[in-house]
Image 1 (tube, rainbow, N blue to C red):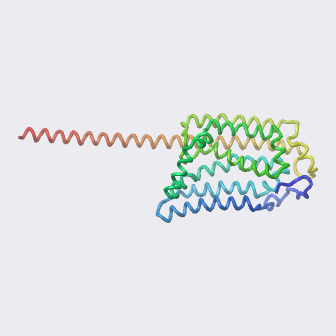
Image 2 (cartoon, helix red, strand yellow):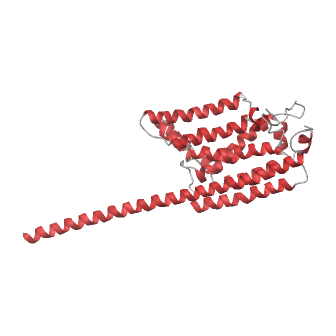
Image 3 (tube, rainbow, N blue to C red):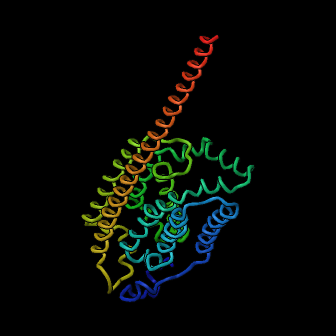
Length: 311
């Protein structure tokens, strides 16, 4: 992991795409711990007779944490400092794909249903705190989502993450965190301190899409290598040339960003329709109850009138 130009790099060819797996113990333990806590919450619900949707568990543990594991431990993690296109796939998985699955897993709702009363109160206090309202304020998280890749690749920040192990690992954590902060209030089923109307959510996705596309196209068409000194120092005789490598990376950012945001907007439309249908049914039930109550009152009034007439 964190391969450097003076290391003996095995070419990424053939079966190496499938066999190049490494498991640093710290991130491996963290992922196992998070997955174990989630499964413990699901088991707690089932033990007391409550149900938890299977697809939420699959989304959080299998797809969300699984995507992070693939991005971190597979050839994507082994060669992420050697090939720019490999890093870009890793970037998009950590920043845009894994957070979507984690959010759909509804971990906060699971915690609220399983934690003891006191701890549940603490979690609710955190969710409604000023800090949470700021960190989960959709226009702010949208700004972070848009600005972060520009700052990363158009400044010296990316090269720092290549040369320094601490900042390299911190970038991975940052990408997942920003992705979760962005998607949590827009896509999630968990309670949020500020619930945005569906049209605003769609607008925020529409705002984000062109910026990722623009940056991807800019990287594709650039005649200057990003982190040029670092990548040229490997002196690779295999794989794409440095300029082709960068062009592929830009194309992957463009395509993956647009596909993810388009899929997210479709999900928002589906949620909007489902919520509208539920609201319509709720209103219908309320109207039915009011009508039944008026009918009962009318019947009682008629009976009272009849009895009075007989007397």
